Amino acid sequence: MTLIGIVNSLGWVVLAMGVLLAVPGQPAAGEVREREGYAYSLDSGELLYRELHRTRLEGGEPATEQVTYREPGGRVMAVKTIDYGERPMAPDFRLIMEDIGYQEGMRSLDGGREVFYEPVGGEGVRRAAMDAEGLVADAGFDRLIERRLEALRSGEGLTFDFLVPSRLEAYAFQAEPAGEAEVFGQPAIRVRLEPANFFFRWLAGGMEVFYHREDGRLLRYRGLSNLRDASGNNFQVQVDFPPEGVTPLKRLEALEDEDDPQGSEGPGRVR
Image (tube, rainbow, N blue to C red; front, side):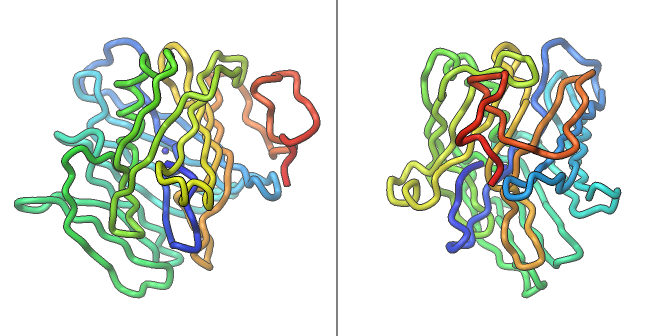
């Protein structure tokens, strides 16, 4: 399945990048593809949830997507629906966590778009009109990466406005290539995503996303989850999307040093 290092004290929510990127080839019209991600706590290393992405493709491009988030025991934590429509980088979407009364999203209305957000506890939905021109929202970030993969491979960074539903606003973000890596034995490019504003960047830091160097498949995301606990705090996670044939980890014993695939001691340890 969001985007990067946001300040919880400001109540910001950023997309956890657990979303499916298109892979090479020309799929049949209406084909449905599935992919599963495994989200581990960066604090304890425990598996927090799994996220199953079911993406319907039309003409080789994502048309709609449903993401089901489940606890390790199988209980549903959240459901997100996405309609890419005519704006694949700023799709309509809705994320619902019924148990804690939380939801966020964006939808199309006659004559415009509306962003909405309901805080944990069911305090009522807050809404605001949103100009979607040039906007990137939710899984639309992956559509942006797909289109600019070659630029990232060549070392070119990206700057864009990203929707933060819990603030009912969009903020300038930057995605910068941070070198090559190896994830699950696959060649990858490491992309660091962070607020473009220096002050917010200093406060919040950033997040990292790893994409397959050749076909842009999402392999790993590390940073804030788009899911929250009962207190309304975003989980800090590493979400792995292991390739077919690779067994997912039972727990995160240490943060893998992607620049040293054999593993090393030091800053890569789970806190």
